[in-house]
Each structure stands twice: as C-alpha cells, then as structure tokens.
Image 1 (tube, rainbow, N blue to C red):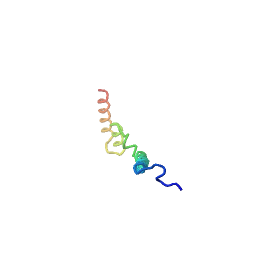
Image 2: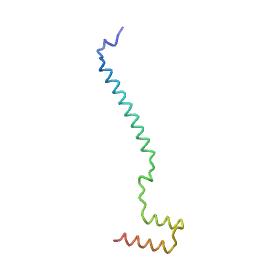
Image 3: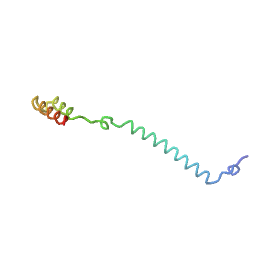
Image 4: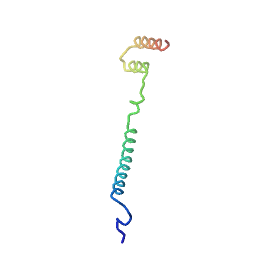
Length: 83
C-alpha cells in the first residue's frame, strides 16, 4: 500500500500546489469577467464623436431651430472649418 509520505511530497509541495490552483482559477475567472465587461460596453458611448453639423441637423429635424437659423449656423460652421 502506498502512502503520501512515500512519494517525497512535503508540506511545501502541497502549499505550492494549492496556491497555483487558486491563481489559475483566479486568472480564468478574471479573464471571463473582463471579456464579459468588454463585450457589454455600449459602443456608441465609446466611439461617438458627433460633428457639429450632425448636431445642428438633429436640432433642425426636431424643430428646435427654423430654416433661416439652420442655414445661418451651418454656413458659420463651414466657414470656421475652412480656416
């Protein structure tokens, strides 16, 4: 019959084995948590850079500004973009 002491395992061997298993599973669970967090991010909030002309067009479409105001502001924006 073979006992644990026969294969030269000491207390340190068991401690290293336990610590390495805890670290292994911590890395696996942490990697899964980071992957889920990364995939659940709202991509529009990360990459949204709406131009001033787009914002102006949205305000015009909602009816916040009238035709004359829209065209005046649009020409001002385009003049600034040229300079």
